[in-house]
Structure formats: structure tokens, C-alpha cells
Image 1 (cartoon, one colour):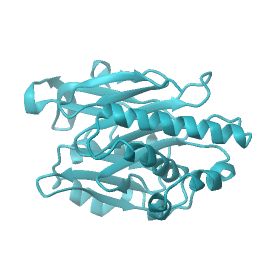
Image 2 (image 1 turned 90 degrees about the vertical axis):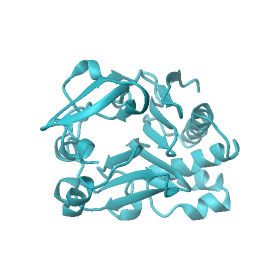
Image 3 (image 1 turned 90 degrees about the horizontal axis):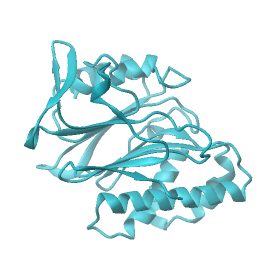
Length: 272
């Protein structure tokens, strides 16, 4: 885990106090890490804290001793919701994890009508105050319809249904400021990243991906090398972890990147 959190030139820890590609460079309102060991359980492990990621001794100790073939990390700059563990990403439901960068302006105007769309199960599952967790609950309602056997395409469908409902709620309540939805969903076997803004005339926040290569960190230098089979990897990142431009591809505006169980990658335009 430390090869993602600490070792790269633009590591997640560095992004917690010096993010380069967003207006506010400080993300000191907590952090979270989720990872999978499917040989033990399909449920992910989750570690969150309200302390800044750059100043958490436990994270520093643990990260060099944790190995996983699927993980997600997030550093938070609080917008909607208090600085509390229940508001830290990634959010966990069943064997699913979701993290979000961005936000919904004037979220309080749509919070009640959004919650009225939720089943009792999802309504009671929500523990925090963030727009992110509420949107995840809405997304889960649409994904659940797909059943227990689903694909990355089904996940993308659920994202589009969530976006469509959100835009209708915003329109009904007269919210004109764009919502920024950079979200990633993982379940230990597949992953979908969303780069989206509800106003097509504004640029979504940055989101990159890297595929089909092996990620290596040696003596502080991190880079991608060609790989096949089990050495292949796919990463979705808000900011490039290294300065090697050819290692990273920007996800186009208002698109999703779908990562399948075999690590096949596909780009898909959001059509709502």
C-alpha cells in the first residue's frame, strides 16, 4: 500500500497537503483507505480517520505491511458535512466501496427528496451527512436491481440512472450551479470511474487512468513497465502519481472508464 500512498513523486499523501490539479490544494479533513483480501472474505477492510493523512502515524506503520490486489484511497477537503469518521471516504456497503471528489451545490435543497427515493435498507444505512454518501445510496438502489450477478456495464448503467435522477432533483429545486461527480466504484473484482459535471459547458475535475502495465517503485522512483498476465494493473487517479506523461491517460469529459474482471478497460460516454 505504501507504494501508492507514500512513494510516488505525487503520492496520495503529498496530495493531501499539496494537490496540483485542483483549486484548493489542501485535503486535510481526514482520509480513508479500503482494500480487499478475497481469500479471507469478499468484504473489504476499511480504515478511516479525521486526522490529516500526512500526520497519521498508524497509516504510516500499516501501509508498508499491507498487500492487496485491489485498493482505494481518498483524502478529504470537507464541503458538505462535518469533519467526522462517518463522513470520510471510501463509503462501504456490502462488498462495495465508493469514493467521490467534487460536490453538489446547495445539496440541502435536494437532501430530503433524495432520501425519499431510498428503500428502508439504504435510508438506514446512511450514517453521515455528505452528498457523496447519499448519492452512493441512490446509486446502490439502481445497482441492486441488476441482481447479484452483474458486470461493469451494469455498474455504469447505475451511475447514469443516479446522474439522471440527480439532475431532475436539481432542476426541480432550482439548483443552477453544476455538480461535480468524479466517483469510483470497486467491489474487489471490477472497477468503474466516473468523470462528470452536470453542466456540459464546464470542465469536470481531473481523472486519469493507466492500464496494462506493471507498477513498480524502486528506491523512490515509481513508473509503469510493460506486463502481461498477473503483473498487469489498472489504476484510476485524480492526479498523476508520477511525472511520466505516457503512463497516464485523461478520461474524457463526461465519460466513465470501465474495468472488467479480466482487467479489460473500456471508455463509455455518459448519455444522460
